[in-house]
Image 1 (cartoon, rainbow, N blue to C red):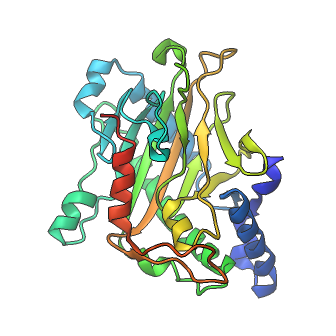
Image 2: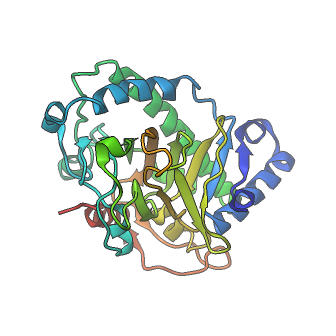
Length: 321
């Protein structure tokens, strides 16, 4: 079963243990990221009530009439409301498909670096919906937790490769990130799925690590492995789902795979199912030179890339035009 390839990693013994306690955890992480690119992480210390409060506030916005939401409309990579038809993630794999059956409120890095051309593209101010003022303090608290957790995960991943703990985090002093609150409404809002249409089409994420807080559902997350194809993703209410993205897979010389996944359309036997996911996409400092790890750690030597030229190309690829 796919769950055997997606272990539950408890961060508490990692944080408190010595080398003997840490070694088997690091080995298990390395094994899982080679097989599926996914982990479940517990003991993360994020306030367990915070995601539910964010969902409640976000639902109040998403359930507004379209005319109330339209002034906040943006395209992929913007800060604001991604409405129906804005995004088709399967485009990143070169696959034609109808647009994803979702809406999102999208946030991104907003603390300027002082380099005007970098800030104009990657560190613009976020937009906050005036209709739900309670959303901002909740999201800001969550983002602080996600940034700290993502750096901790990158240190764990470096150790899993037997590299210095700061091998990746030396490049996250002033990183870019994205945060999407994804709303997956039922068919009364989006209509029945078209052939080949999903809440989110098959894709891999683009950055370093993605941290997902999700709700379980019949029209929920699936992950793909070579061994088992598409399977429902394992779920643990105490866990965050973590997967690595294309940039980190490239960084490891394809030792690790970017976790391929999709979100199923509203199910025919539960057409009113409504889910909200909180998705934090972590990246690195703007214009980091990403070079593949050499053998024996790495498996494929990719040409070095500018991290953010690479990321911009990926974001442009999934934009519905």
